[in-house]
Length: 203
Image (tube, rainbow, N blue to C red; front, side, top):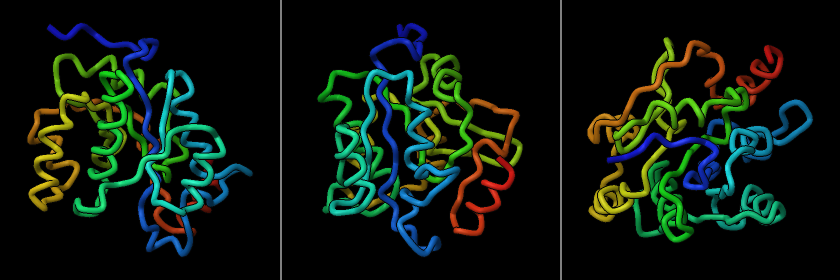
């Protein structure tokens, strides 16, 4: 039986998802400034209570360079796998399994307003489910999630078959726990430079 997990457990590691192409942003989103800090630096604070976190980033990117400068593991997607965020999640699960963790908490680099307790809330609500993810009145946030490392093999099998399912569809399919958060704005994404400026004005 799976016992309740806690953010204080050393069994949970963080993975900052910063490997997107930022095609709508006009530059590398992860290093855009928000409140005088890079987006990835702000979002990484969500993992401050975890024993370890890694950065998922494209090789030779500024995000990868920043991760190396921090002294954390920098994970690259399997080049033979279809492009998409779940490929980054799979890389994170593989890393966490090798490091001896049982869970990874993921967050996209463009969500600078994440609540400080979001990982704890996911850990509190996951129960025996294979994963847990955030939902607000404005929709699902499948990359703000907690994943068991046991998901590595089934996810990798899907990716190895050349399929990249939508993250929310995959989470529903595996029976992930849905964790409701009241503050929808806390999970807002800065998909464009204008959206980032708007989030900063409202912060």
